[in-house]
Image (cartoon, rainbow, N blue to C red):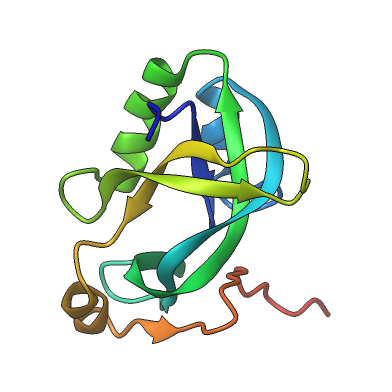
Length: 142
């Protein structure tokens, strides 16, 4: 596999979500809709140590949908994203392959933030999302 040239995001870092501003601060240039295979997506609910809900992926049978984000300086971007994701603690950053929705585009080597294990997801009451799509629950207006 080639060296990762971008980051695959599937939750709060996506455009329009809670932490997209961190991607922008990290030098976000553009995003393309994409998916990854060989991973399972989970919803981690808000809790005593979690001020808001967020997703997690672990390796396993499945497909996860999100976006590939490119940055002006990937090394600089990873410093900010690693801090947000608690890389090496709560999440691990690993290389994988993303498939862009444009069928003419070749697969893309990307970084991915994963939970360390299925047991780690279960320990925080993770709920499996078999459709592979995560969206933050918005408070009803009114």
